[in-house]
Each structure stands twice: as C-alpha cells, then as structure tokens.
Amino acid sequence: MQPTASHFINGRYVEDTTGEAIEVIYPATGEVIAQVHAATPAVIEQALASAEAAQREWAKRSGTERGRVLRRAADIIRERNRELSILETYDTGKALQETLYADATSGADALEYFGGLAGALTGEHIQLGADFAYTKRMPLGVCVGIGAWNYPTQIACWKGAPALACGNAMIFKPSETTPLCALKVAAILVEAGLPAGLYNVVQGMGAVGSALVEDPRVAKVSLTGSVPTGKKVYAAAAAQMKHATMELGGKSPLIIFNDADVENAVSGAMLANMYSTGQVCSNGTRVFVQKGVKDAFLERFAERCAAIKLGDPLDEETHLGPMVSEAQMDIVLSYIAKGKAEGATLVCGGEQLERDGFYVAPTVFADVTDGMSIAKEEIFGPVMAVLDFEDEDEVIARANDTPYGLSAGIFTNDITRAHRVVDQLEAGTCWINTYNLAPVEVPFGGVKASGVGRENAKAAIEHYSEIKSVYVGMTPVDSAY
Image (tube, rainbow, N blue to C red):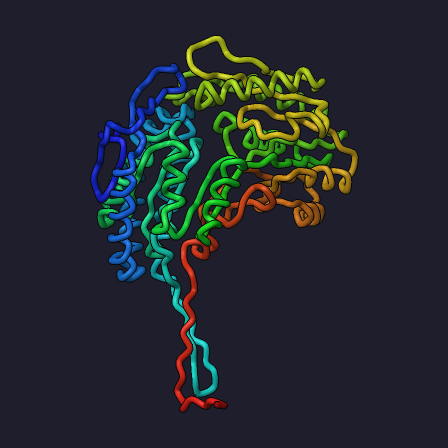
C-alpha cells in the first residue's frame, strides 16, 4: 500500500527530488519508514494547471455522473479498508483497533454521502407574475484543502467529497507529518473513474500551502489545523476574497451533572480525552464534574485508565498507540509538567513510557482551576483536566469563558436540563449523553476562534458552491426614461 512517489498530479504519481526531503517517521518506533519531497514551484504549477483544466469539463457533467464516481471510490476504499488502515497506523501511530473502524471507513462514508447527494444539487424556480426567475448552484472552481495530521485519510475525503460533488477540483496538501494516506485516496479516486487532474495531492510545509492559497486560480481554501495557522490562512484567503472554511482547535467543555449515569459519563470522558491518544480537535478536555459525583467519577475513570492497553499499534489488542511525533510528545509532556507545577492533583499517568516510540501514559488531573495552563490551552494529547462545579449557571459561565467554541458535551438524566444547557453553550458541535461522534450526515464545525464554515452534511454544499440567480423577463421592458 506504500505510495510510489511524493505527489499525485493529473492522474498519476509524480516525483521531483529537488524539493526538500521530508522523512516519514513511524511513531511507534521512531524509525524512518519513507521519504517524500516538498513540492517545487514546477510541481505546484502542474497541480494548479491540471486542476483548472479538468474542473471546466467536470463542471459540465451532471451531478448524477459525478456522484457515481464518488460512490465507486467509496466501495473501493471499503474493499481495501484493512490495507488502508494499516497505512494510516504507520502514518499516524494510531492503534489499528481504531483505524480499522474510524478512518478509511469514515472517508468512504463521506464519498458515499456526497456521491448520493450530487444529483440532488438543484436550484429553484421563482414565479414573479408573468416574469420568473430561477437559481443555479454553481461550482467555485479550484479548491485547496490543507489537512491536519490526526486524521489524514478522513480529512482528505471530508474535503474532497463535497468539493467534487459540487463540480470543483481539489488540490490537497496533507500535513508534512502524515503525508502518505492522501496519496492513496487520490489514486483510488482515479481508479474509480475520476478524470485526471481533479484531485491532486502535493506535499510540503507552510511555504507550499501559502503558494497554493495565494494563487489567483484558487477559489476556495479549506483548512483543518491549529488556530494560529488558521488565522494566517484565513487572512491570506480574505486578501483575494476567496471562499474559506476553517476547522480549527478548541478547549472544549464536557459537563457532568450529579444525576448523570457515572459509567456512561466515564465512557464519554474516555472518548473525549483518550481516543486517538487524545489527538482530536473536538476533545472535551475541560471536564466539569459536579461535586456530588466527583469522587465516584474519578475513581471509576482511574480504574478504566489502568485497563487501557498501550503498545504496538499494529496489534489489534492495543487500545492506544503513541503520539504522532516526538515534537508532539514533548508538547504534551511540557503541559503535564505545568499541571504539576501549577498545583493540580495528578490522579494517574503523568509520564513518558520507557519504550521505543513516542508514548505518553493516559493522564488525569483533578482539582484543576480555570486559570491553569492545562485548563486554558489546547494540549492535543491524552491529558484530562477535571474541574469541580456547584450549579448550572456557574458551569455554563465557566464553560463559555474561553476564546474557543468548537465543541461541548453534557451528561445528565434530566433531558430538559440537557437542552437548556446546550442552548447556552457557545460551541458549534454539541453532544448530549455521548461524545465525539461525527457522522457525515451531521454538520461539524466551530464558532469564535475555533473556525468558520462547516464540514459534512448538506451544510458543506453551501461552502463548495455558490448561487447564481437568473431573472427572465416575459413582457415588454417598461423604462421610465
């Protein structure tokens, strides 16, 4: 399943070794398993030129024709799920137990969903007396997708599927940390019948992303990444009035009331903090626990943490693999040190594991206060901060006291309270009595500093197309002069 070159452009693998070398490191061992090269100006030009030419013809096809290709690609991905999941594990270090069910399969879901929706992207007729008007949904043109390293296959499909369904072309730049998976997505799309040039993958760091974003041939930019990077990309897109979707990070609250089912709440907090070794943008890392259930919650969570099996991510018995990189591991360890230094109570974990690779033990801090670094800043690792609270009004105010607004969750058996609280939480994606489920049928995205626009569902169509209105006069023109 290893890709055979650094880039995929105009329907084929492309190599240009004059670009800066980027080593692909397997997080479980620290070994170099592959090398790609950053896109040179010549490679970027190939990607842009082929995308622009192919998009014109693709836009002329019916939505049903476009959808058929996407659905074929979804079928191929499902047929090769195991091989693609193993590649995802090598790329990210995530446990195969997870990648088999959450990565290539969710990418296939996106291709299937938007493939089915493509034929239904119609306009409307508006009767205006004897005259009438109609609207058409038009593609934007060439779109650029910039991916994050935590879900490389999924993000490549989440951005590519709605773009292609609407009649656009996509140039996708994966994270330099996880460059392999998107190349296979591109090859599968062509195998499924996608015309050459419509889905290109180029490698590189920030300079390559900037070159793509700033090119006048690009109509739309979609980024999944950090808030600082998002602000830069959003500003660059705005400078040329480009469409933009920013799916950024957060410091999301998870609120557990006294009447919650403790076992369910612990399971939700596990999904909100430990899944993918804590490397999920929507994670509920500020866990507000009402005082009446705090001790029971912490005791059960510590028991569940002790049962987590860390180890070889290719072993299907392993629950959690390593951090994606040594740099990310060092960031997480620095926050653990801050948590200890600032007076939080370490419940479990708190150290790097003594083994090859970039492993950090699942870590829980209690008695965390709002001003601590681990309560304010995104960590992106298996570190959970537990904060006490007394009543509903207090916890809502504290939950919203953050510049971020990606996600939020609540556990309670009082369904009236659940909806009342969720309505007041400043977050784009919320869960009640569950956490971190993101089916393609549901819009996903944040508010405030956590981004603009939405991924997935019918809402994504609005971000990959625009409306053209046409007024048709059926009577003589009456002019006053």
